[in-house]
Image (cartoon, rainbow, N blue to C red; front, side):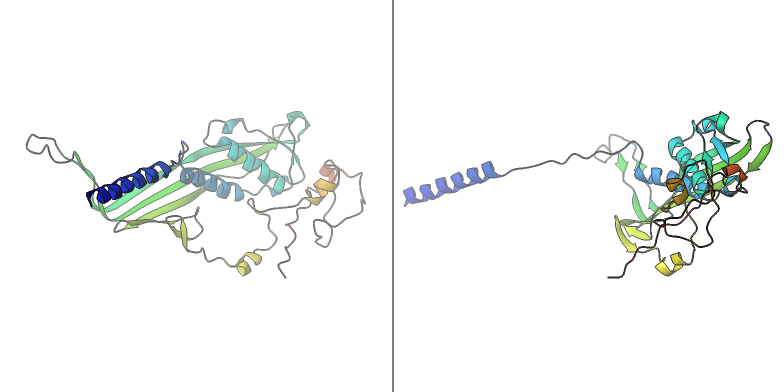
Length: 290
């Protein structure tokens, strides 16, 4: 009987060792960027809103040189410069890399590009405990005990743009001071959270999952009309199908981006087109019918 029990024990130990040998483990390496995604979204969203509110239409059809040197020291200068250049093109301006070939010089500046935040806590904040001999067993820091907590973050962009004639230096146009803010609000209730909401979020989300949509319907978006927004896709058929130095008046009827149009006036220059820039069309409507 003892020999049988010993055999059972040996078999159990052997099975345990075999299972441990077959078991595996793995690790996942994670890393974070130096700047959080929220910070980058706040700044880029504020820049988008500020740039979008500038009306470059008085310079439509004009040859302009974009003087970007005053933006090199601001935060995310590459994104701001590219957004302004794109918006100039979307408004019908003709960008020239050579200053001597431009009629007007467009000069931007930034007064503020950055973020800040504000925290509000209902509960017991984190507290440092003085270390005495009698209290040596207590932890050095009492952790935060929140009943409700809120963190408001915002991104700010303040920019201005003006234009002048390159040869004479005469003032031609200015945008005025344009400022915009983007927001991201986090809320914790009884330890649950964060519930996120703000201009950089589409609705309300919890731990990355959508809870409430932003409420914008397709019908509301259709009522906005064919205005070309900075964040929207746009097609510029005249710039794609014709030489960049020739301007044509827009046809009386709106055409699809794939429509072909015969060349009627190839000798007219952009300066003689009554200030009208190249035709800008929204992208053709996608057919959603089955």
